[in-house]
Figure 1 (tube, rainbow, N blue to C red):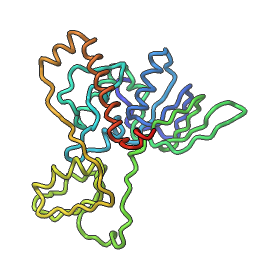
Figure 2: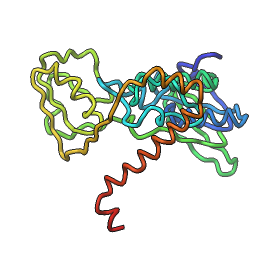
Figure 3: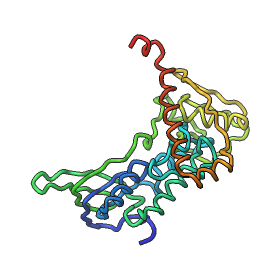
Figure 4: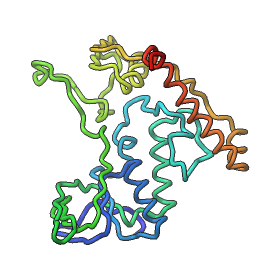
Length: 266
């Protein structure tokens, strides 16, 4: 099998050593490390029709990471080819798909397969799990990598069900809706809104932004990574790893600025 299975067979029964739930960074990392340890009896379940987790589900305008690209990647699989200091959604998703191909994970992945439940059998020392449409799985180890950003949270606004116009959550962006000249209301000013509001504002007739608590915003200092940097990273991987370490400690020290007087008082 060269591609991840798109959907499970009805009434399929499987037995594996490790069952992984979730095809984002966590689940894929677990799968890669199992392969590196010589373990091939594992199965990864993903409810969507592609891997990537957050970076597949979220495709709103301007979707990007707020962690530098050379840090927001597997420490064991650094890439010299990031196009920007802060990567966009598509580039991160492409990186994860390359990892699936590089580590030959596709035969172990089942897409469009929603995990339902798992019951621990103490006597048999095994998990009895169900997923998809009639799939039954026995596994010695169960690993959860479901993340926390895959279930949209909608505001509890009285009468919202009577709104006749298009409405959707940023994580399930409806790209079929033409926003040109529309009056748009955005509820919330979290990280997602910070990214997509500047993208849609120029097209809107009027844009109303509702917030409960003002967030802190720090400039990303984003820029296109020069080709000469990429060439150097390819030629001397140690330089790329040193750059990653520099970014890590720079980010750590920036935390002190957010602690303020709490840090001073100790």
